[in-house]
Length: 287
Ligand SMILES: *[C@@H]1O[C@H](CO)[C@@H](O)[C@H](O)[C@H]1NC(C)=O
Ligand SMILES: *[C@@H]1O[C@H](CO)[C@@H](O)[C@H](O)[C@H]1NC(C)=O
Ligand SMILES: *[C@@H]1O[C@H](CO)[C@@H](O)[C@H](O)[C@H]1NC(C)=O
Ligand SMILES: [Zn+2]
Image 1 (cartoon, rainbow, N blue to C red):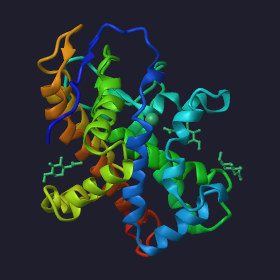
Image 2 (tube, helix red, strand yellow):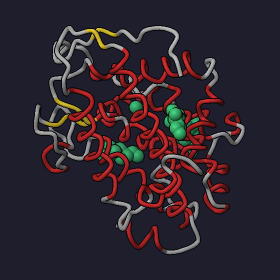
Image 3 (cartoon, protein in one colour):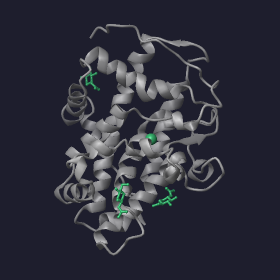
Image 4 (cartoon, protein in one colour):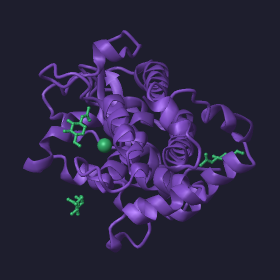
């Protein structure tokens, strides 16, 4: 395929220390695709539970509300959620350690993407116990879990502490450039291509390993580790502050972004199927 326009974004790697962490957000498109993929893979119990939990105005479409956590993160009432969208790991360490890295900027434990996924997984596991548990808003738990499964797969959301610059390229520019150049700006066409690549294409053989998870509580650590490894290998490597990213940056990174969207969707479905499913598997392994 021939690209129509050059890919050119100047990277201020490591220079924008003071920009708010709030600038980090997997594009709306990324979250929508992750949630569309997940919802299409739900078994009947989970599909019913999700339908039940969604507000009426979502018309049964989970993806319509998967960006909601990004919309409310700066509202006073939801300010506590703002640190849940990312993980800062020590510069150049290229590893994720829950006890070292999963906290907010004040050092409050568990306040990072992985802690959030664990939190909302545990909350949703009470859904099957019936309506007596009113401590938690199950609708919000579903929306947060669905959103953060997307975020944990965005490699630069598990990044170096001093970097804010690589994010917008990975969050938005790669997806939007792909849409514009290859898919006629049609999200549906891109989504179909991603789905085709894991149902029958280049990722087909890998899908069962994506779903491997012995313990719903600890598996998100694995997803975060994958992300920081990709961020190190493909995000930061070979690029310098102030450098213009060109076509070869785009061409080599786009397949990674698409695969992470697919993995996020497949794994969100796996988690929801186990949380809401018939077996005791989810309950037994999440605590
Ligand atoms: C878990 O969710 C509750 C609200 O339901 C919130 O008060 C708490 O801070 C959350 N913790 C994490 C780690 O997400
Ligand atoms: C749960 O959260 C949703 C979304 O914020 C809200 O619309 C709904 O009223 C809440 N439900 C309860 C019982 O508080
Ligand atoms: C799907 O796989 C083909 C190779 O078979 C590749 O050219 C295309 O870019 C992939 N699409 C996505 C969205 O990953
Ligand atoms: Zn987010």
